[in-house]
Every structure is written in C-alpha cells, then in structure tokens.
Image (cartoon, rainbow, N blue to C red; front, side):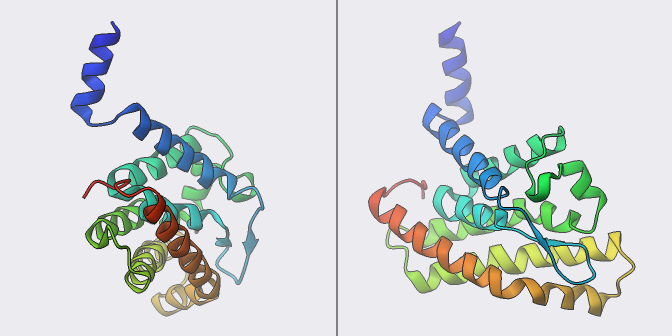
Length: 194
C-alpha cells in the first residue's frame, strides 16, 4: 500500500518536503492572524498581518507550493476554522466587504511565485520589492476593489480610495517579505524550482 501512495505523490510532483513546506506556510498565515485586526474607514475591511504571510508564501515557496499553502489556509477557513484575523471564518469573510481581498490572495501568491522564479538564483532586492508589491499590493487591491463594489454600496472611486489606508502597512510588509525572501534564497538555493 505504501508503494501505491508513493507513486501517487510522485505523479503529482509533491514530495513529503513540499507538503511540509505548504503546511508550515499555511500555519504561518494563520499565526499572523493572531494579533487581530484593525478596521479602518467605512469599508469594514480590516488591516491584518496575514497578507505578509501570503507575500512570503509566493516569494519563498514559489507559485506552486506558495499558492497551495494559501489555498490550504483558505480551505481551512471555509470549513469553519476561525483562522482569519479577529477569529473570522472564510464564510464570514466571503459574505462581507473583505471577500475580494481574501480571494485575491491566491492570484497574488501565484504572480509573486512565478515572477520570483524568474529572478533566481540572485534575487535582486529591487526586483524582489517590485514583484512583491505587484502581487501583494496591486493584485490584491484589484480583487479587493471588485469585492467592495459587489459587497457594498461604494462607487468605483470610493472603492479605489478605500485602499489608500492600507498602502503604508502593505509597503512595510513588502519590504519585510523581500528581505526575508532574499535571506532564505541565499541560505537555501533551489527552494523554488526554476
């Protein structure tokens, strides 16, 4: 029976090490929700540290494993685990104004992971910053804005300007994630298969 399971794993291209890394990053995203959330403005969308985990997943694990880690985390919240900041579940978040931001985590991680693979093995800081900002800010904000338009009575202009309150914190997360990713890729080259 063990041989059959090993064959399945190898056909899927996911090793035990890959699964462990996926689980660790899903847990990291959950842990970054423990400090809670700060709701700013009138949109009802909270500021959390969990997007730092999303950016790190793509920048450190790459597109395949990073996206899998975020998908595992979101799946756990959708089955009712209160892992989102403030003890929210995925169903609660999807019913509220932050639905688009949560959904945007998956394409953000994918974009970051795909582009990060292109700049390895050196991982230049400036390119890392740009990639992490593109995925961790631009992609998430686009999905978040669409979510706000669908879940609230905000107009397009108000939905876009709602994101301005998040920019300083998200820029800090991008910097932290870039510095961490640079250090990890220097210490563990080949973590992302290029």
